[in-house]
Image (cartoon, helix red, strand yellow):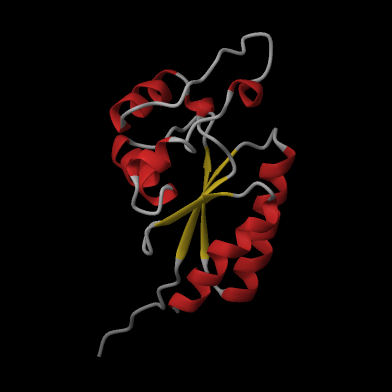
Length: 142
């Protein structure tokens, strides 16, 4: 007889602890994880950028299957990049272009970004209550 631990759904949050919105989204996600029994994969995305395969998937998920739509949402805009070094971050035209930008500037990934890899869903949790849009699906998966 074998014993197998229960498998809980997992949501990934690409997080920037310096952003109020990101901190609030993480807190809501943590609270929901206790209630709905899912795990959280916390990625400090200023220092740990997504892999190229993750970027490709995230673009597709953000656009609900439309790469063109996902490309509009994955990167920060100029004002969001902020600071004295702010540059205009234009909408990329390809996933490869997004990957090149994030390889050089991982902080340009919009945050808080929450991904449900199993269901192929992603969203930017701004405002933070958008967390519940993705949590509901993860909870129903069980």
